[in-house]
Length: 198
Image 1 (cartoon, helix red, strand yellow):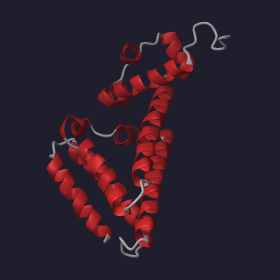
Image 2 (cartoon, rainbow, N blue to C red):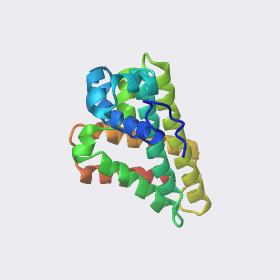
Image 3 (cartoon, one colour):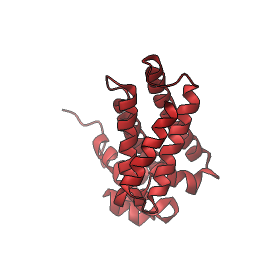
């Protein structure tokens, strides 16, 4: 089979792996704190391959963020579209965020929130990506709320406003998790949030 990648150019799967590896570096060190040597070591790419594949450090961050957001949104969509009770589906999704917001994962926080707080105020591309992810999350939760309202599980109130509340709750948990809030406390927050939908 002919290889169209060209000499010295990493295969597509290697680029995807490199982006995911870079995600870990940015997650641990932040954008400003992630040096080029850190990224080279973290991805296993040479300087030339990194620049050829992603353009520059910012290009690598954007691809890493895209991978992170796509993974999270896909899992949320899967959980919220499960059959049966819409309330149970929303609780399952929120509980996943509760777990991610406690312990070592909680102290690490959310990569999008970290990049948004570090970069969004002066970087329109980061701002747009973070805003797009939060908007997509809102739409996923709004659709689940509409389904729950149709089934009589939730009160007939503005599903977009309720979904926006849930997105704020999730992101608030991710920030609080950096301070060491326990999983039990996070689960209590989830239960309190669900009462807003009743």
